[in-house]
Length: 219
Image 1 (cartoon, rainbow, N blue to C red):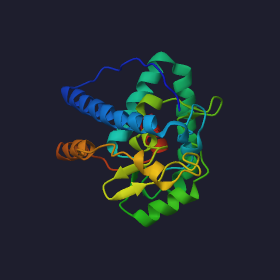
Image 2: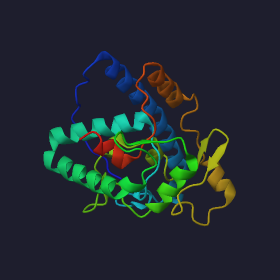
Image 3: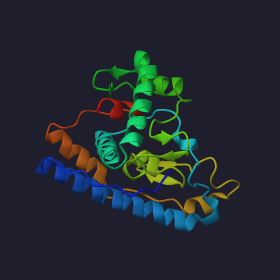
Image 4: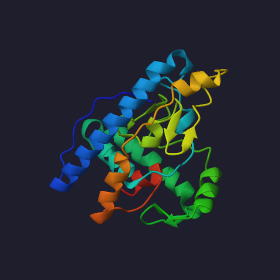
């Protein structure tokens, strides 16, 4: 993980600006909920800069996550071109490794609606590091722009009817009541679904992808 200042890229259209503003609101809600959970968790939460256990292996991300990552890559290129180029190279290397078994549209980097194939794909490449992770520092080069799944790693999370457990490094030997009192609902109003629905209506919903393909297909 990594806290990092950034230079804002300029949105090209008013539609992009609306999307960015909606995403900014979503992140504020989710980060606020996770901050409160972290406060409640105290020493039970072991997450810290340089811990990258959750940065290994591919997982599905939404078009909104992908857009945010690409925006982060553009902003990284503005302030640190060399760092951005290294990230691009890592993304290309990872997609090359994954390409033959990618369960979807390889040209677009979009996953098919086949959960079993997706699970097999994720299991097959579970040892690959995320290209956003700087191997030298163990920090995320796109931390401020990371997908929602990355933001929710650590404390116990409630998403709909699913009670997700905390990170295996966190809440070690904690009694169940300690875990449950720290559980949060990160997006109680379902704002993410509303934004994705709006993208779909506008014809800009491309489908789920993974981090490496989201970055590589933007090159």
